[in-house]
Length: 209
Image 1 (cartoon, rainbow, N blue to C red):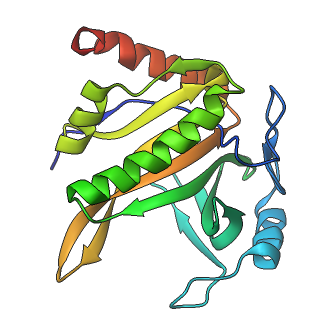
Image 2 (image 1 turned 90 degrees about the vertical axis):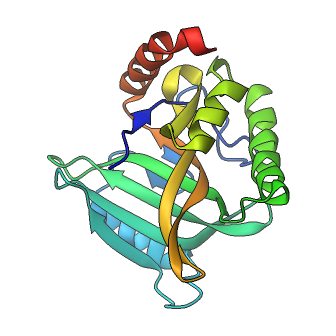
């Protein structure tokens, strides 16, 4: 089993007209504190559904019992309908974190890498124009993530309210399982916690940067 080191980077998707305040309450129709019924109702209304199954929403649970609801092909962002995933507190069952999937990359050729990084640069440029950048993904950090030494990285903006997330997701492709590269935008209610954990990790590995 891989030894996973998790570093954090956060972003706000400024290309979306919804995010303009310094303190976020969610993303578009999805607000922090909503219950599962409210979120399901919204996603059933706005999402187009998965291409193969037609499902608008899918549910899953984490190891701690926390619920996640995935909406398939919901909001149009940068010319495409994007998946949105909402996480809920395990105790209160209220929405606490929102992820938007902006890029799902299996191709690891130089062309594929360039496509992935071009999306990142567009989102990063938008965020920097409006928000304070707290922690940026360095080339060294990207290389560690790319090699598998680090499984997930975050770029932090606005004291942790929003992050760009480089993640990996196991997927079945061409007869085998591979780790696809996933670029997400994370909106989190408990921003001080995200910022604190990110700062600790960056201080731990600052000698590498």
